[in-house]
Length: 526
Image 1 (cartoon, rainbow, N blue to C red):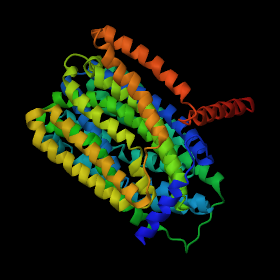
Image 2 (tube, rainbow, N blue to C red):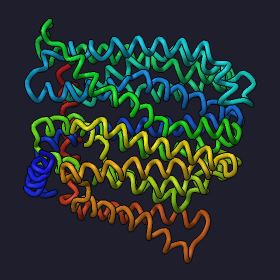
Image 3 (cartoon, rainbow, N blue to C red):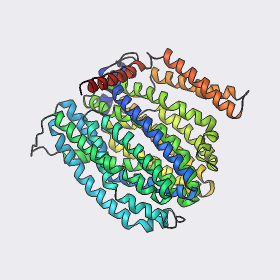
Image 4 (cartoon, rainbow, N blue to C red):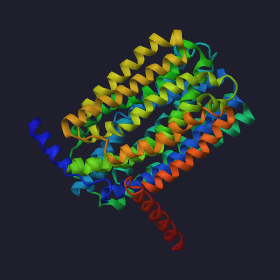
């Protein structure tokens, strides 16, 4: 049976369209990617400015408390999702492909009720256990960490509603609510509130300001979900339709996998604070904010393609899946490799933005950027595995990567500080991408290394990797940095223009034009 499936997948992929062709699915992915890339751009800038504000206006100890507390909050909210955020996208995408969206309300009820119950329980636990958590995770916080946790706990249910509602809208086929609310409104609101209250009231107001943004965005997200669901199809409540068993069999492995994935991104900061001190946590948290910029772009492309992968794999359209996977990987490389390569060459210079002492994270940043180059080149491989229904294997891969991360952290952080944490996370990143890459190739003969991906790697590596190395022989300091960036973007822009057809950039441009035209038409009709 497995061999038959493999042969079928192999024949389908062999017939896949060339990278120069466009498909309706790719055009839809492009429209979603444009929205999410815009949202990720706003989110990335807002998050980066928030980090600069905290590191500049607060001490390293206070910044370390903030980074540790927000990391724990995000891990708890991820645990409270129970995997339902991915499950609702998977089942609604399949329902849309089969013309069964009249069951959308039933799917959402199946997802949201347990998630809300667990969110309330977790919020209560965070509130009541704030002091023991501080003693364990931030022993030098002198009550600050516990105060943060008590305030943030009040907003855990809001984060749960925001995540499930925006996931539901993605399952209905639109990226706009995710981009507008979770990627634009919430981060900008957090930046404004933190900046104002930090200036007026001091570091004690940061946790309240950061958390409050979840309340209005959760309300708007739920309203937007209900509005889109009513438009999607007439509501039908069929008492004989009970998807809970299938829904939670799929989503349950994603609950642990989701927590593990967030833990790989956030647990390092908490462990650095506990094992090496809050000042080290501040340095590591600031250094890894640059990686968060690239991960936001990756998430933007991934969220756009996720429901389309669900549709194509539901129809066993492996040719369409291969096309989506390879084209989206090329876009991902083009969007993220320039950032990682610049940080590899000029990490110490860029870290100086955060203030005195933060350049000590240079070596950690170099290790993590090198790992992210490999991870990004694998594309959204874990999403392909999940949308193919192999959520158990995704869970296995993530747990292996997390166990490696934690083991190396406990082994290396006490003696090497932030550098040890970087080694642990880098190893987890590599395992978390290479393991599923081998699996999707073995089972479905799918891989991201099409012609477009290889061209995207070359178009990024030459201007931002090789060119700065060559200029380093004749320039140094600020002149080297500025000249490398200026010439790099000129060469990069020229490469994108010359390779625009092979890289499917015309699809993205067309999607952007349609978005602008739609906005103008909407404005003229009001």
